[in-house]
Length: 186
Image (tube, rainbow, N blue to C red):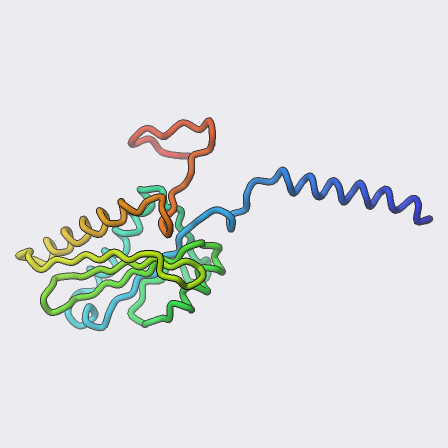
């Protein structure tokens, strides 16, 4: 084949690929999303039940989903709820691998003077701390009451950060009506 016959075909093919790429919606990596890691301190391991730790992690996850925070899950590891310490750098690497834009690092502790203490730190992928929220309870008569008050306090703190740096919310597409409370979203 002669070159003058191939060049127009390649040119048309290249233009087609470029136009096709422009018409595609933003990729998942371009959409802000959060990767959550929950760490259980040695004091919590010694002084509290694992059900408290996993329950708090699940309640926090449910709260974030209810508030339409886009969450990323590692397909190999799932969500990380661990007693083993990890460096922020390692957690950030996983966050990057799954396409998240933010790392939410949650620490569940059991200091001697409190039923439960929770710290939530938000990191950008550059490793910079964006913000931190902390909640605890020492005044409740039972651990169950302390758990509930701590969860409410951390949810209140996080609610103030929804839609801001480190805690994005899903954006409704133009023309898509807001779901009615209780309605199942497709």
